[in-house]
Image (tube, rainbow, N blue to C red; front, side, top):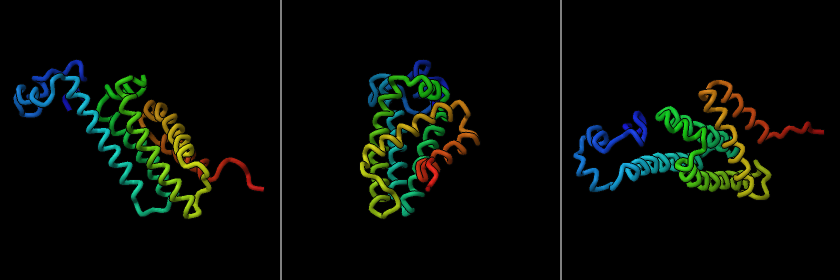
Length: 178
């Protein structure tokens, strides 16, 4: 929480020690630098996000509902991070190198989860997907493309409407049936 309020460059190990109730020496036993500690804090967030994506993938829902829940969970994860830390908001909007490294780890996991959902949906006859991996990559790329506008709109009502529209297009397409 100290990093969220003061930012990683303005936070000292003394600040961390005071907030955690530990001694500075104890903290240095586990982390050699403030940057190392900050990266560990981010890694914990990444692990929680990945756990949540895996949880959604394992839900006993129809593949269509599971995919909709997954997309919502993706945006909620971004929203929660941004709301916790205004510095992260700036980092996300500028596509900072610090964030992109962790994003790549999350992206890989999301693609795996989406591939599983597309495979499950195809095997059950709900989806018609020939290439699970590329479809997952396309779905994730589209979803990530919405993030900046969602952040700028503060994840308000227009964002939820946009996500619903995107789901409608994904599930039903835009071509009128003949």
